[in-house]
Length: 354
Ligand SMILES: Nc1ncnc2c1ncn2[C@@H]1O[C@H](COP(=O)(O)OP(=O)(O)OP(=O)(O)O)[C@@H](O)[C@H]1O
Image (cartoon, rainbow, N blue to C red; front, side):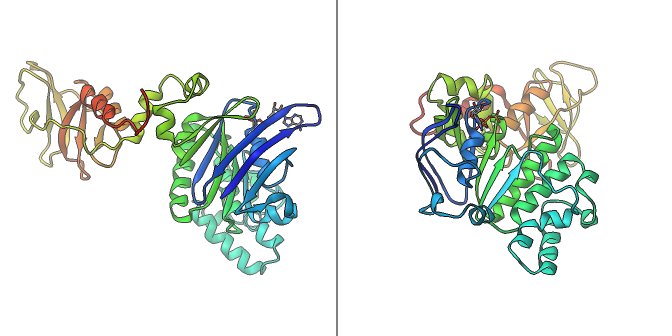
């Protein structure tokens, strides 16, 4: 566990970047620091590995005061990933990944073979090993940055805007892979981002900081979205926090109507979903219409996808209803937007006021 106890950082010019911060960061989880520009996120992160020293207060890692540790030793035990990956330009990708094991004096051959395995793990082909950083795309460089931070197998990783220098599609795939990786690794991760969507997607816990380095709210993403503690947090969460909450609710209890799934194109008084011989959605039949079936929009997999996917499906289908399918893509029922939002209302986290 990483603990901040009444930690303040005042820079020599008088700027108070972090003000009397107390925080407990649990082991094996992703804790995200999020907040507007200048609120002290990076300063908070860098005080953990002593790239910045606090002015007052105590930071401990597993009970040990970081002040009592020699900074280079402390840093070697903590992975650090930054926005532009921060790779060494004149070293190959493989040697960049193996930087820390080299520094630790590990056997070079073994460090390189471990680095190759790590590259594979973060989705980089072995053929990149001999390339140099400038020969990789931004997203590939970020993967190298993550692999390098993992190379010493540190229990703690600090990540400062690790996925922000790439386009939204690459960012999403990096985030998804990172979550998959963390499922196996269970590192204690502290991540900084200014992007609230990234924070609620990746964080087990999210700490919203206000300018001046004070905590607005420290909570699970679900509770943050369901019940922001004050106006600042609410505004920071944005207008669509209601819709974003849907991501945290499973779709398995959503009431579904299977009665309007048909195998032949006969119109009725209401919308019907036509399915093919395998039971997969093939078209919509308009009420009373004699026209050709309308194309189907996206569907969602019951029990696997969230209510947000269900709502997305409802919005993208001409009847305004979501198409629920099973794992094989077979249509199992329809759900209207009303059902989706009432399923959410039944799932307000305990103690949350609406
Ligand atoms: N070396 C410094 N000297 C003086 N003030 C500093 C110094 N470093 C940071 N600050 C100030 O401290 C405050 C917090 O900075 P910090 O970089 O921690 O914010 P941040 O939340 O990470 O911001 P951003 O999202 O813009 O990166 C800011 O007002 C910043 O200008």
